[in-house]
Image 1 (cartoon, rainbow, N blue to C red):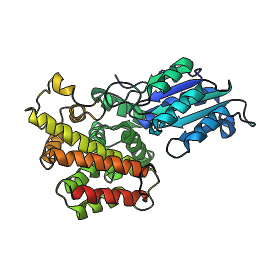
Image 2 (spheres, rainbow, N blue to C red):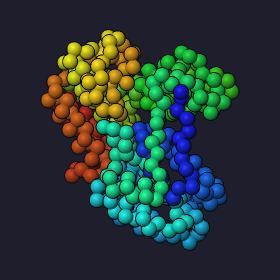
Image 3 (cartoon, one colour):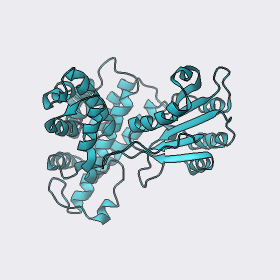
Image 4 (cartoon, helix red, strand yellow):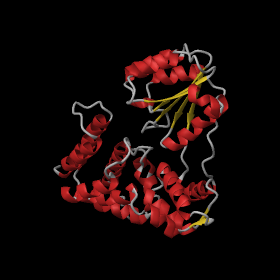
Length: 355
């Protein structure tokens, strides 16, 4: 079945939403915002804070204060898992003494091993005492095509099967990218009622996911010049702040998929062939960004990953993921070196080509 709207108790004073899709978490949060605040009240009553962009002590001050202009307040704290563990525990303590008129919505990622929020236990315990924790589930592979049809329907459009298949190939079923690509295609067709394959090609040919293979291929062959050219296409001048983190996430995901492909190959299971991976091997792979789920029987993707996996050794992949992690800290302002977002990714590309 396609993913339905998350079951969120809009009367809960505190809600923690977790999962892999930022857009689906935002949609779930909107249910509570719509229930608690009228459109007119949101200018004064709604505050949205993003961890990593706001000083940690500001979260406590914001949650504890009362608004002089609004009777009811909704405070949304996005990516709370980006806070340091001690800052998460501070936030947990604040949740126990919220003003009655304040509603708090928090979002975080899903832990890689197991279906639980990627935050400290003290925070989840505090949320359970005063509110709810809701897992936001993305559509399963077998339901993605129907989900895309429904998403097109929200724009008043139908969508042809070839267009659906192309969207899935371009985005590798990443929900947030699918939402964006469907919206672009729906706008592009104008008054026409149906989105065709040519429409997806017209607006999606330069998408980041469509170029990630080229970028990783260039990294795999240590061609820094080509990799930097691909990066320039994917992150052109004037790109909105924060896009570099999204691209870094795609690079990280790709290297994790390559690592899993190597592990499967060593165990005698090639993903470029339609063979079943045993459960004991599947248990070693993460729930999120799982290579078997990503390939999903699509041998063309298995071939690409298999070819890329041959270009790296295990030590090189370990160093690559360490470099990605360090760049992630830099982009979030937690690294020792302060670089522009584009400069940070260019430095990462050069470093990866020198593995």
